[in-house]
Length: 157
Image 1: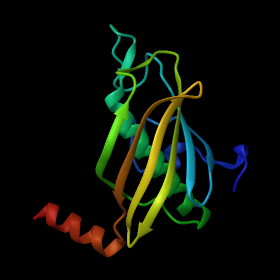
Image 2 (image 1 turned 90 degrees about the vertical axis):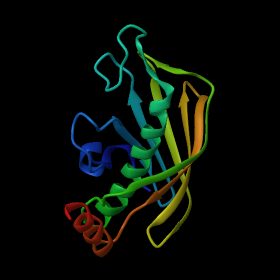
Image 3 (image 1 turned 60 degrees about the vertical axis):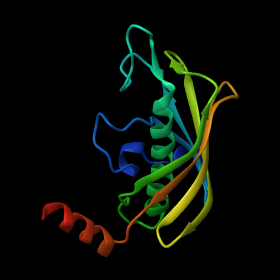
């Protein structure tokens, strides 16, 4: 377990480029759980200026990037590069709201349910002021280097 001051910036943990890094901050991470935050502002990606909000459907990506931050942090602890991972699917995404509103501070939590041979399942939730706004199970895959090379080679052909 680590304290609040020792977490690297999310952009060092999540293998995305701006503007697609959607998670702002990692708050906590350990062997099986992670807590990140998103600050909903007018500058946020996917922000609807007319509604002054972001559609709750973006919550799935917030959850996926929270898992990616967890994975990147585990690699950071081993002094390894953050791995590329893939969201395979989402089970039962349930949201009590259709929008995340400007000014909201979203707390995104993920807990590893299982992990084996690069496959993983995480239970995720999004809260705002301790009220749960959304939850889901996400299934992810982190290929090893050989698998990733094969996938990339197939893309080039």
